[in-house]
Each structure stands twice: as C-alpha cells, then as structure tokens.
Image (cartoon, rainbow, N blue to C red; front, side):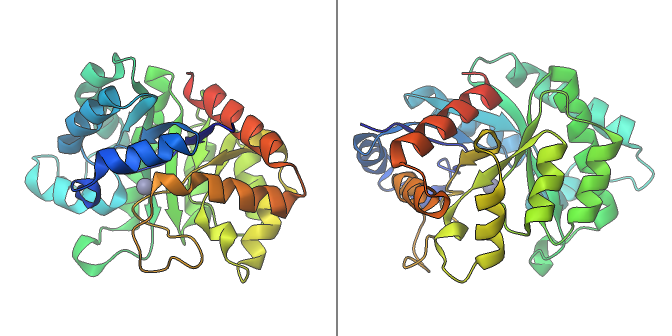
Length: 274
Ligand SMILES: [Zn+2]
C-alpha cells in the first residue's frame, strides 16, 4: 500500500467536529500516515497540539496566519505601529518557547502575505511583512522550518526571505503560479506544497510549474477544509483526498504513483524531521 503525508491540513478546525474520527479512519485506510496541523493564532496552538498528540502520525506548527493577525493585534497590547521586527520576534519567541519543546511541534507557521483578504480581516502589507520577518527569525531561533502562505504578494515575500534566510528551510504551501516563481522559492531552500490546484485542467501555469520542479522540491498537502479538488468545488476538502492529489501529480509528471508517494513522503520527513 502507498503511504501519504498531508503536509498542511487544518484538521483541528470545527468543520471536522462532527465526524473527525470517521474521516481520520477513512484517510488511514487509504494510506494516510499522518498530517501536519498548521498554527493560525496563539490561542489555537493548544488545540493543534492536543489533536496532533491524539492522531497517529500527528504533527503541528505554531504561527500567526495573516488572516488572524488583525484580531490578534486588536486584542493584544502589541498593536504599536513603531514595533520593530526585533520586538515582534522576541514576543513570538516567548509565546512559542513552551510549544517548541514539544516533540510533535515541527515547524513555525503558517505565516505569510495575503494581498486579497476579506475586508473584515484586512491588515496592511507592512504589518504582514514585519510579522513574516519575525516568524523567520523565530524559525531560525528554534532551528525549525517555516510554513509560508502567499497570495498576490510574492515579490514582497521573496524580499523577506532574502533578508532572513530560513536555516532549516520550509515550504511555500498551496502553491499556484509560474515556473519561474516556483524556482525562485526552491532556489531559496523552500519546498513547494502541491495541493488540489493541480487537479484543475485549466490551471496550466501552475501545472507546468509543478511539472518542471525536481522530485526533491515537492510535498503533498490538502489545506483542508479549504482548496477543494476539481469536481468537488463548494465541498469541504479533506485529508482523505491526498491520494487523489498524488495520482494527479503522478499523471502530470509521467511518474508511477508509488514513486511519487515515496519521494513526497521522504521530502516531508526531511522537512519536518520525523
Ligand atoms: Zn493553511
């Protein structure tokens, strides 16, 4: 049987509250070996930690997602425009330290830049960039990889990576974009998270980019409950669909399924040290 790892799955979200154990059993029956649950905001880290401990092969990350940044800033005392990146990094290191010691905690993130957020969550790109830079420093402090999210702000994100190079690497998750863009991340030591977007026949640019990368660059992810596969638009995405993403990747790259599952699992292991 082929073994898969879902490198980005928000399995702690309430979308799965009603049937989490049934979904998990089904995913395991299909060969899922484990998931990494990303952090989105400090108050959610304990729930990601708890769930990752309950699941066989469960891992998690700690970070402040750009969509949660506004709420975090408005309720914490740290909303000072003059806060330097050093201060943010020191603040985050302090919040993260108790979790970073946990053997299930394997990465810093997700963090990133999002230039098309819903209006209620909007926060300036400057503040988002300061937060990314702070996360990169935290990742280097704890010698952990970083998980990055990016929508329509790739040049700015690449600039952050050039300022603070992630020593333990990381992943640009949910990648969509050109071959050149994918290479720009890979050259900077980031792996590329391959999800449901490659199952859309019209996503030519992204499909070409994923086709052109070396095996070592690729990890599988669902980003569940978001990013549904082609044919499942409007439905909840699920870790049960990782094998289908692997199949699409194998077809796209002209490789055997067991070859794709082996190298993507190996890459996830190298990246998250498990
Ligand atoms: Zn995510």
